[in-house]
Image 1 (cartoon, rainbow, N blue to C red):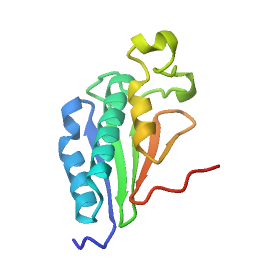
Image 2 (image 1 turned 120 degrees about the vertical axis):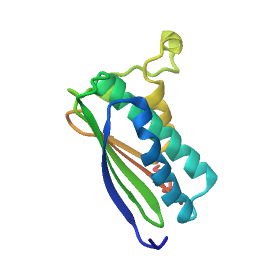
Image 3 (image 1 turned 90 degrees about the horizontal axis):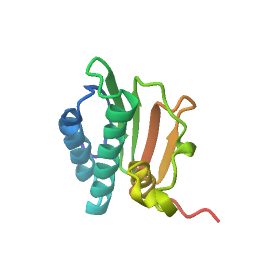
Length: 144
């Protein structure tokens, strides 16, 4: 497949942390083939792992009968990933900021913070069981 052609795939994975490996490698290889930087590869790898672990652990509650679906598109300018679990969902605004006060000593929210820090766009479905994240090769201009 030519590196100038977009890659669009949908994969459904088991709710076990190790299930992400092959799909993660495919996404990173597609980024590398399109000239994304090592910083971009690191950022996407980290966000992908955090999102998948959250989907497995918190969304599907480690239920092996439930699945996680990852839909992704990689083109010359960006990678867009949508991850959906079969859990009840959550309200991301209710997760405390792990950088503030007593939250510094709690494990909750660190993965979400990392995802927001490394991806340029992060959006959750209304139900809260689907996450859309985008990383651009050239970051969008800061909003004033």
